[in-house]
Image 1 (cartoon, rainbow, N blue to C red):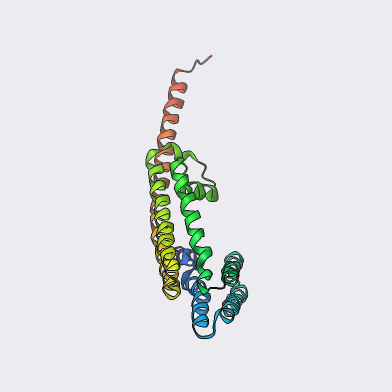
Image 2 (cartoon, helix red, strand yellow):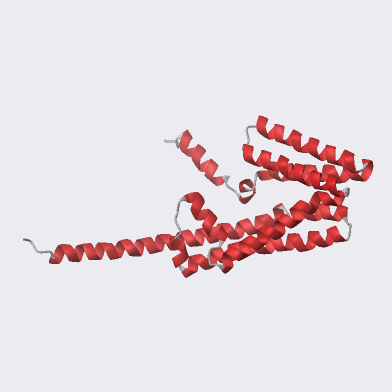
Amino acid sequence: MTTPAPEEDKDQTEERQETLLEQMGGISGLIYSSVPVIVFVLANAFFGLNPAIWSALGAAAVITVVRVVRKERLQPAISGFFGVGIAVFIAHQTGDAKGFFLFGIWTALIYGGVFLLSVLIRRPLVGVIWSALNGLGQSWRTDPVSRRAYDLATLTFVAVFAARFVVQKWLYDEDLTGWLAFAKLAMGYPLFAVALAVTVWAVRKATARQKEREAVEETDADVEARLRAKYADPA
């Protein structure tokens, strides 16, 4: 009786664990992004703006240290800390707790505009970014099916960013800081998960199309090679 090699089992287990949630940072990533926001809102409600600012910064610093100690990827930890830093700086400058959310609101508008523009100029960002990261080239742009799939994925991100901007800007204008915090959390990972799911579908669709096209090209090349060999001049 034979048993699978331990290394093969390990590789298969790691492949099976690649879920959408893990690609977004897992449960820990969700908690990391939520804690500074919750701490800021609660501290502001009970102690005022300045204690809320320092509390949020402290929470972000602790989370950054924890991520470093756990040897998680450094870039998200640093980005998260600086993101909180910018948010509390704006809150301090405006003298209002709702200013904590202003950076995220306008960032959503900018991102949504960039993603929409990429579709209008026929270079959907989801396809461009994915191809660049994986060294696949831009041949998919000549295939209408692949381009439409990437268009749909990119437009999903446009919808996510647009929803975030519209809802959170309205709450900001209405001075509903508590609901603004809730909207930031509720429209963060959940909506991003939807956009990521569409992106996974688009990537699989485009990858399958690329393989089909490569197979056809190889078949044509084989036919041409056989014809050349058949009718080649023996001299």
